[in-house]
Image 1: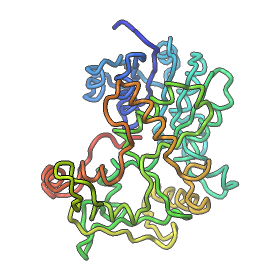
Image 2: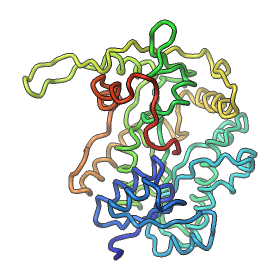
Image 3: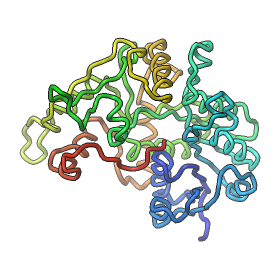
Length: 366
């Protein structure tokens, strides 16, 4: 394959974040997309290859492989995916997969890095909370910011994925919404409050996340060391269930009338736990989730550690990517209402699954 354009290497290209990044960048002829994967024969890897991506098979933990794979790269997107190894869980965050890749990128002198990060609950709380799921990413961000080998380093922090509602374990552990009714016939979402104004950030990772990373790579100096909140829509858990059940009025494009738009005609509600400690946690990762929610609550619901939740930045990046792709796809971020309409209208989603319960769409990794 002849390599034309700036080479951007994607770590985790068959996952949700990396796949979205790859698909967006592949629509821009100024970039050559190189995807690193452990299994080049996988369905997702082959799909990316058909779209024009260069597929390189190998283990990112192998420094010799990474030296070859990263050769000539102008940019790299890294998502560590949070490896559940005992060492990482015990705080040895330098052994996290994504952070190993980050050091390889520095050794290969890759000039521009976009790194999927999260705030450090441990550092921001003065050691009150232990949350490896957040802190491992924050360790890599701190290392990358300080690394002189990079010309630019941009951390991007993901919101709650709309796609989580297709993961059975997520649905079951948080009340059953939007698939499984409770004893009273409601699709109930049960989560602790975030604190503050309860402004919960959401994103359609398939449609939007990749465009935000694309936008950063269009002008990396502009976003150097600027934490980017990957936020598509902002609404509380309660409003999310309301939108799912009732939708919002919208204009009828054919008749010009304003007609009510019912998304699912399902009864849905949000019942909060009084505090994070009340959330059931019979599994280790749910115990860590308690810590994460408690951390959010102490920050008055500011999930990203750098100020209030906002999607103005994401909107700017989305529009830039839209232009760079030749004005293809969506120019604006996807709202919760639009996502539910697309995936949960009775004529589509419920028929596909035969009303039998949750289904899994895509990968459960990040």
